[in-house]
Image (cartoon, rainbow, N blue to C red; front, side, top):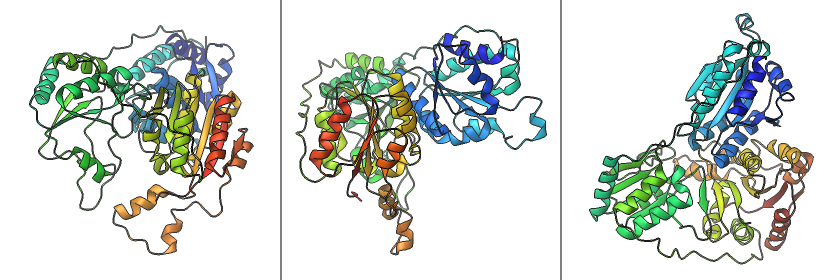
Length: 517
């Protein structure tokens, strides 16, 4: 058995049966072996950033790793931005990077690079397979490492001659470590803080944002008067009718600081202490008030849901109070804009939908108008590196083919990984993409003022606009095999969205709207 077959069969044995790929010459034996291992499904992408983002979306929904196959150091570099986002989302991803044959490296061929150094930016675990005899065990170890907990990026570097040489064997799956139980001292410390009757808040993230965790946190808040907040950009949050609505920590540092003002205790549940996204002249980076004590109930490797339920029991919290959820909004009429789009989505979102949210500034109204929608999952831009939304939607759709996926995409961000549309068409996944086309980098116009930079002339502002020429997303989508429309009223948008949800396969709706900034 050659090394490539041992690798694929060992991945399948470890319950990894999808690989998102943009391969090259060094990976041809891996590609050829897909015919010999039909249990492994290869999904071709046209750009490495689409492959790595899709692996992230898949892993978030399956809570189990996908593999991603990349071509040498430059291929890994092309995929690095969405691996950064995957690292921040704690998505378990096995990254397989093809490498020159071991005997070829010394010749410094044109594509030679230091793959280990590139991988180290995002990977917690890195291993280079040096012999076909060890590649099966290396694959099993990579999967176990990726699973954590918490989930992480595990990078396996695969030299071409190790892949094509005989001597490989299938390795059994390594046991996956369970999440750790909450420590008694952490539970005691948090209980004491909440019983003190001083101003307190729980900041929830990660695995705590499943229904059970949100219900337990809501019970705690009702029993103690503590405030509840959700981290700004969560990897996956369960939302919708019947699930407690919890305010999100604001993106803008000054608004987040206002939400935290006056707190004496901040309790972290599977998230980190809040800091400003960027540094701003004369403003603090740490958003926690100086008089506030920060206590960790559960970290990334802990069972956060069990910790919240134990805490609720410790505090004698009763059943969850009535949530008072808002009703679904009516269908919008009139002018097409960010608000009317949010209303339409709230009115039409299907039961069990998955939302990949990279609407950025155009998404301001979405949380309020979707709170009463049927149950759904919301996937956010965890690492701040734009170009995540379309690939994450693709990966989520591959992971959950029975569910409808909605990709909410800012126009500037969409252009980073627009190639993902082609893979959606090829795979015929049920993804509806809404492009918020305000034809500018609106977030940067806002940040221009916030950092204290002055730009009174046209030369600076031209660097923040993506028009002219106007980008024709309808033509681009159709060229990549995805049916597309451009409605010009709220009524027309709502009709197009309803049709896209009803029909199988991918669709794109370009919504040309005024910028909010």
